[in-house]
Image (cartoon, rainbow, N blue to C red; front, side, top):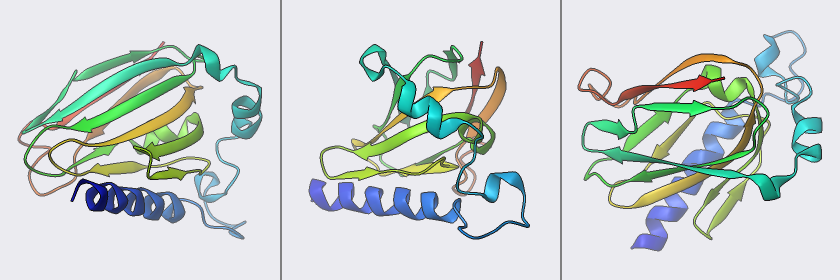
Amino acid sequence: MHHRKAVTAALAAAALALGGCQSGNTHGPAYARADYPPGGAAIVASTDWSKTVDVVVELVEYGYRPRELRLKAGQPYRIRLINYSGINHYFTAPEFFRSAATRKAMVDRYAEIKAPYFTAFEVVSRGGGIDVYLVPMVKGRFDVHCEIDDHRERGVRGVIIVE
């Protein structure tokens, strides 16, 4: 059963990634191009991934732990999204993900998804997890929330601050 949940999460992540990559679109907004963010591929290629810092975000019944992530621009990270609650949750932060150089997302040992950026991840209940490897490039404050039903209003939201 755990394998099935992991594969479902991998497929959801892949669908989200593909939804953000509209190949051949030269007339749409900049974030619809496959090379977004500008220079992201070069940053991913030149980053020393042995210096990756692990950050864990626990998705609980109605919240994220921690509610605030503080990251440094230019530092490579593995953001581990682990859902300990009994319900599925999204980790939605499109502005943050579009401003980061993304290497890949991984679901346990079952899947590795590569895309220039993601907008959101749905993490299945009871221990489902996704690892996102990226380098924040733009300093600022970025909102993150769950888009399922009334989860955002019930407290499944937070902030990512890039310094």
